[in-house]
Image 1 (cartoon, helix red, strand yellow):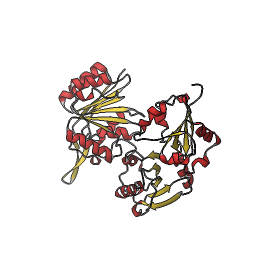
Image 2 (image 1 turned 90 degrees about the vertical axis):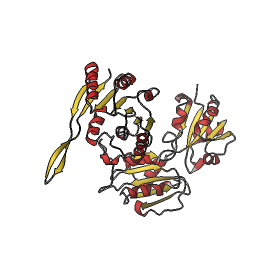
Image 3 (image 1 turned 45 degrees about the vertical axis):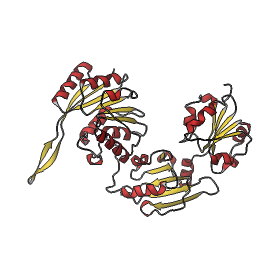
Image 4 (image 1 turned 180 degrees about the vertical axis):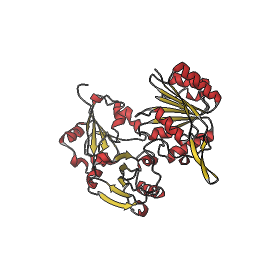
Length: 400
């Protein structure tokens, strides 16, 4: 194309009056304008209008049919910051698009509160699971989050209070940038703000001192944070296992024989972009994994209830694989074949039979073979003695 035909234009609560002359010209020249009802009402232009359907992807055929004709998509604030820009860019070439952003709700919130935006966790709870906020609840953290609707602030206040973080301060910023803007705040354990506008942004100053259950930044969550039936990679072995898996940003893990899902969950906690698939043949355990994922702030963990290797056949290619429950020769071979070059595999074994399997894998494929033994002090009468857990043999390798 000689020039972009699709313009993404950010709008704030101050409406069309705040648009640049260039943005106004693009809107005036458009043959089709796409946007939400609120945004379309702000614009005075003769073009055909298309209100966003649900789901948004249903509008893509109509937008793509406009190729070569001037088209405008209206978005809130910055279209490429938790906006519609990413969706559009996945279907339209970059040189066919032009974007004029407006200040985002994040930048407006930081400006109102005089916060340094780069020091804040920035996330969206709009159209996304509420539990995503959990890993960010760190002592002294500052969080800016887009709300789902008017109920989100009170829900977050209850959640913080239940977690022992009731002293945290919540700022509710409504209709930022417009004539009806309002900024209020309250402590979580005394939250009583009412008449909150559906369009609001939350800013949280987290007070999580004392014994509040803060998710640590290093692997090895306490075992009792997971609902389990004993099938759980225990804390100390789990920390070593996560270190061996070496999570990197935006990678996918297969957790085969996931048990309580602890490895997959901590893999995802290592970075918000990381993904995992937990494969578990027992239906009750599979349901338990999903509950653990919600409780610990990784609601996007995918759980597959099925038996390996059959359940692995159509899964997306992983960058790393962990096998912690019931490894056998067929599953191990399938997993190794599924890995791309430089993919990582870690397998834990406690039985002699599986240890022998890992010894063979080590001999054939190299890597590292470790013997891990953990002992914890236990009372014996008036004294203490070390009580050894079952030894774990771990094979770890990189596919070359």
